[in-house]
Length: 198
Image (cartoon, rainbow, N blue to C red; front, side):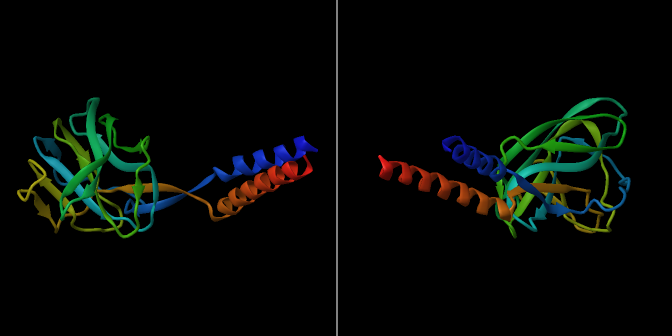
């Protein structure tokens, strides 16, 4: 009987760690549009976005390629907002690019918490290579900032198509909280019952 109780508790615990993926931001659309110019050099490229929902960061996807048709590594990062500019880094990556347009997936290791309604910045760090960051496929305009540093010298291209970006978070499914509480209650009840019988 004791093994049955312990098995039920373990099953509840394992199920409770499952999570659901949620789109925090998504403007990719059905296709990507080639931008009229390349990025790169000594400038940062920063794209602000507002989180539509919260949760812990799971992954970021963006359509990007090396404009010189060669393999390279490019630094990228997710930053908090600081009075309308990129602030503290929440997580950074070194992404491998090729000359072929690819939907690059940046998987989160730190899983920073994102809050619904808050502004964040996705930043491509300076690189000696030419980078092609493909525009969104839904017609969004504006939002890309280009500059030499995180300061008021950033230039906002409000009339340009916004680069494509998809931000995904993971949050426990509503039912998992119920299972988690059921498992905990079961464990407490079992422990108290054993204490009384002794």
